[in-house]
Length: 154
Image (cartoon, rainbow, N blue to C red):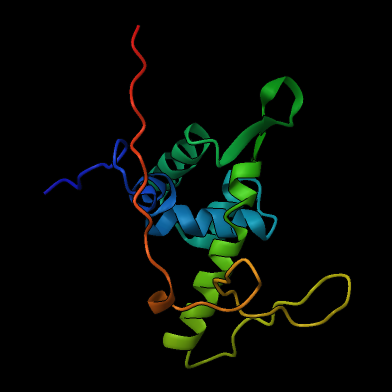
């Protein structure tokens, strides 16, 4: 059964998942955040089949999460680099990592110890906050009904 696409969905989460929500795409983005840029390096680090990696990189480029940059003479080599849109996924990836470390930790090794490059101090847990910086849980928020966008008459 084919998965329904939510390109026109009112749900921004569904639309975002269309762009980066599958297993391999998020891992490609994660490794791009670690500094991986070349096709062969993504393939080696992820252990991913060439056809799947090619598809995910193409989709991430099409969705402007990554950009393909020619770096070799006469376009003989290219690299994949995060765009601003891709870099904006950083807090999502960190939050997902923190959630995974809490609820599905590795039995063999300790979680990655992410640190602030400038101070060397550990980073805080990602949390949703109100406008005054106070933490919020799912029970503390509601969805405000919005006025739907109307199509302009031609």
